[in-house]
Structure formats: C-alpha cells, structure tokens
Image (cartoon, rainbow, N blue to C red):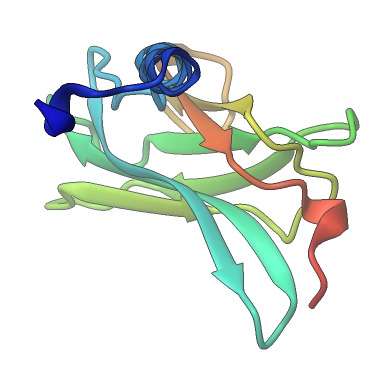
Length: 145
C-alpha cells in the first residue's frame, strides 16, 4: 500500500510539529469580576511603521459613572508601563484602550496588560483588577519597514 509508506524521519517531524502546536497556544481571553476581554493584541500600522498594544473590554457588572479605568501596557524593553485612562460615563458597555507605539517586541513572548478600576478620579479606592496576556509572534527589531 503506497499511501502508508512514511519515512521514520518524516513521521518524527510531523510528531514534532504537532507537539509544538499543542504547547504553543496563544493566551485565552480572560474574565474578571467587572470585565471580559473581547479582544486583545497588537495594532500594526505599516504606513506609520508602528506597533501598539490594544485591548477591548466588555463590561460584566455595573460600573458607576465617574469611575476610572486604567490600562497599563508593558514596555517590551523593560521601562515603565504606558498608561491609558478612561472616565466612565453612563451607558457604556465596551471600553477600548491603545498604548503608545512600542519598540522591542520579541517573538514567542507573552506580555501582560493590566487593567485597574477605581471608584473615582483620585484613584484611592481600587474596585477591580483585570489581567490579559497577549503574545507577540514577531521580533520587532527584525522588521524591515
């Protein structure tokens, strides 16, 4: 039966690919008390030659108007996080946040976006926290824009 002839080396390569795929799962959308991740990852602009982190959150529980949502995006080079904030108005159900352009993303590395919910603009009362990992599949320094 010719269709069953598989070389041992080919079989080993196929098994290796299956094993790598099984262990290389992208991060799954997370859920916390107040939020569920509706989408997270990177926004690439070839025309501007930039890459930004992005996260969209879906509200799961009532959030008082005037509350502050703060998204902290990591600096791939190890510096301070980039912070984006939003003051909650009434009737909102989704919240989108984008980082400033980043440099130094590494391939096959997870980055953690942290979201904090405060009851007011003084940020003295932390009401909730949400964490989402995103995975880079590229080495940004090797992009030939």
